[in-house]
Length: 127
Image (cartoon, rainbow, N blue to C red; front, side):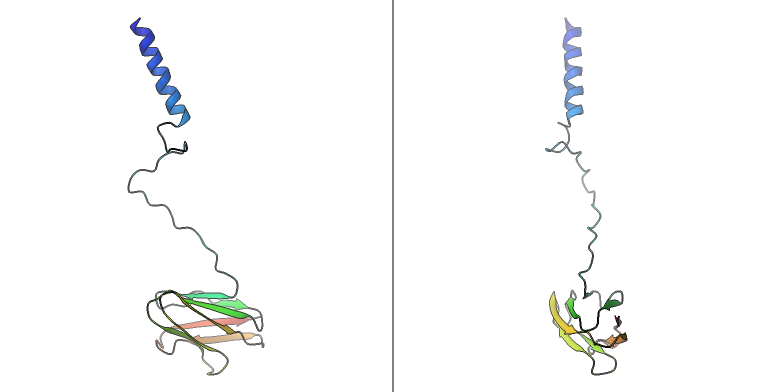
């Protein structure tokens, strides 16, 4: 009779493992402790740029006259100021502050900088 109990126990273990009862509550496998998931990939919104780590990121391309939204993820205040001195200029508060400016109506490449941090440089392409 002991053989029947052993077979029954093995059958129960097999069923539990097969249904995921030893996994997460929803049947999904559990992650080993200390495992880090990769960050979610996000696509920047059209006509937007993010300032992070004192960097404007990749050059931004917009249509003529588009409204461009700038988000500042640094704690320091920054500007987006056209190198030509007058095409566009916006001051953006730190810690998630946002500001907008209107892109030039004339297609072309418009380099810009931060007036507070002159080594910060970026580029806006209008086409």
